[in-house]
Amino acid sequence: MEIIAYEMKYVKDDIEKSNILCIPFEQKYFQQYMKIYNTCFYEMRKFLAIEPYNFLNDYKQVREKSKDIFLLVSGEEIIGSIACYGNEIDDLIVNKEFQDRGYGKQLLLWGMNHIRQTSNEPILLHVAKWNDKAFMLYKKVGFVLTNTVRVR
Image 1 (cartoon, rainbow, N blue to C red):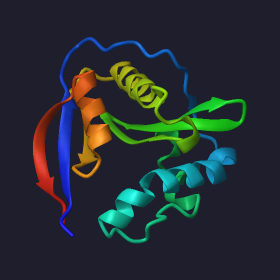
Image 2: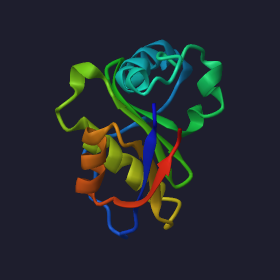
Image 3: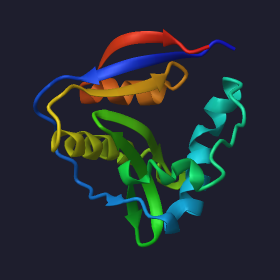
């Protein structure tokens, strides 16, 4: 199965403000995060034959990266998450129970504003061609397609 990924960049200076507040990742959220992460990426990984389909299974996989992962929570329930590595956005996920309510856009905007606090470089992200919904969201917010990469 061929895998195509799009590289996208946001090069504008101004970014729409987000109406949410994210908190830093804490290990106590790992089990819930793992379940949401695996659920969000399962269909894509299965369709693209990327095994294991449920990739995340041990805190060690995120321990080093956890300082760059941020959560949107309500009480103790994770609504969604976003990772900001330097000027790159990754792993934007929304709990299935909260999808189609605008949280994906708000998480994206939060991450973009978070990155802008420390960098004026273009904001970068990658999205699988398979993920039309995410691609359209990124375009709507102002990301432009800068490269197409054949991953496999």
